[in-house]
Each structure stands twice: as structure tokens, then as C-alpha cells.
Length: 358
Image 1 (tube, helix red, strand yellow):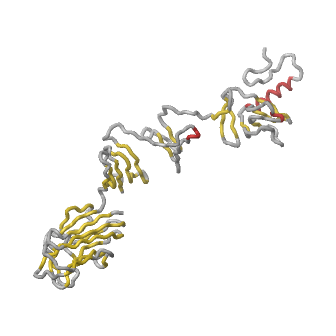
Image 2 (cartoon, helix red, strand yellow):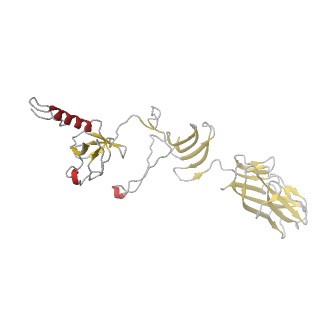
Image 3 (cartoon, one colour):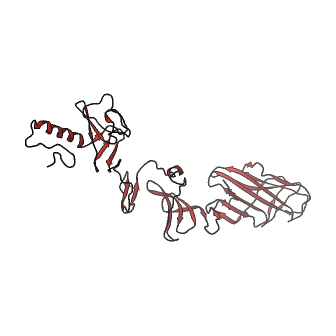
């Protein structure tokens, strides 16, 4: 019969043994060190100077002094003596200074957490996952970083998302208070799409990229091209807003044909241009001018132009173009002017155009 237990090697009380309390106390001492095991540290290679009764450590590699030859063992300090507890497979201990639970695998102390999680049906981090969201995380920051070459990686980091068919959705859904405000990805097709919404049900495509050509489109970009469908008479020495009363296109209804001006829907930088075609009213000595005007009163810098030479009716033209920073609800209009003699700005070929560019 053995004189110690099989797993913890606790000494047995023997039938003919004297002073059985000594053996019993030794077993209790070992149990006190082994049960609910928690060690203070696992990196020291020599005993601390002033240990307290009951202190436990895992000995670091290369141990010296009273711990020499006890590398990776658990040591217990009781009644002024260090006792070695040689670990056996499956022993677990809490590392107090690291807040870490380790297990002895027969050769080393390793984390009790698994190194691989496979075929999980639900995973929640900081919250509960469910069938609608099998992976759920509730946190304030997340980091993905590449495994470096020195760690055996490539230094690259790619994030792959895949959908089954072109008509399916794939992308990011960005929400506020669980109301979707933006979609980014391949939604309903394989063309790239950025769409925004205020209420989570009506979406506006802000940007799309054709997968076949790579051509970028901004479907909601404010832009227009307008023209006058009648000859605009303008008297001498009078700046007059031209009646650009028709549009070839007018995205977002940014051009108000009833009032003959463009209205900026949002703050930004806009590019405008205009074409003014002269038509005589009896004298070709007219001097034709044109300009773009902000909010009905201020000439936009660098938008002014004039042709002062001899005019040819329905052949002499003036072209204007400029950039301007606008605030939401600012208006821009095209104005014409004749000096020396009156005249017309000709129908169909007198035009005004613009678009937001930044």
C-alpha cells in the first residue's frame, strides 16, 4: 500500500504510526496550498525577502537560492519553510498580479482560455447574441491590426465580406438609435453604392460606381442647364435678369424657372457658366455685357464679361464662367446689359448652367 494519495501526494496516516497529528497536519498544510489555488506571481526566480505565511508563487525559469531546481513549480511558504508543489496535468491557478487563470498542460502553464473557437452558433461580447445577430458586440472601440512579418505574418490586413448572389445585399448599415442613416456597399446589385436616409425607410443615393466601367455617379448632385425660349429685350444701360425659363436638366430642382435663378440646396463650392447670344434691335453698335449675380444684388467676382467690338446679329456671343462658395438658399442669376444701343439676348442660344463641385 502506498503511503501517499495518488493525485495530490498527501501523506496517509499509517496504522502503527506514532504522532499521527504530524502527518495529518502535513496533509492539511498541502491541501491548504493546493485547494482554490492562487499565486502572487509567476516570474520570480528567487524567494522574496519577506514572505508572509501562506504565500504561494510559481517559480520562474532559472530559479536560484531556496527555489533552485524548482522551475515552474508551485511553492508554498508556511512556518518559515518553502515547500515545493510539483504541478500535475490539469492543475489550475489564478495569477493575482496578472488577473489570469492558467492550467498546467504537463509541460507549461498555459491560458485556460481555448486557442480556437470553432463552429459557434452564437457569440456575444459585452451583450447577448441572438438568432438575428449571431455575433454581437457592445463596446466603445475595436481594432484590427495586421500580423507582422516578425510574428510569422505578412504585414497585410484584408477584410473580406461575401454575398451569395448579385441581387443580395452586402455592406455596412450605419445607424443612430437603431434607425438606419446610411448604407455603404453592394445593395441589390454588384454596383458600389453609398445611400443616406433621415428616417431609415427613404434612401437617397449619394454616390454609385458602375462595376463594369468604374464610372462614378452622384445622382443627387445639384446641377442644371437652362435656356430662354424667347428673345429677351434689354434696354440701354440697365442690368436685367434674363428669363432662363426652360431647363434641359434640373437635378434636385435646384433651378427655379419661375424666378429665373439657381437656389443652393446646401453649403458648398459651385461652378457656373452662361452663354449670351446677341440679336440686333436695329443697331449693331450695341455693347453687350453679362454677369452672374448673388442673391439678386452682388456681382460675383470674375463673372463679368463684355464684347465691345462690332456685333453680328445671332452670331456674336459672350461666355461667362466662375467658381463661387455658396451657403444654403443663396441664389445665383444671369444678367445682361447693353450700352450705346439696346438689343436682344437671343432665344434658345442664351443659356445658364451650374453644378456643385465641392
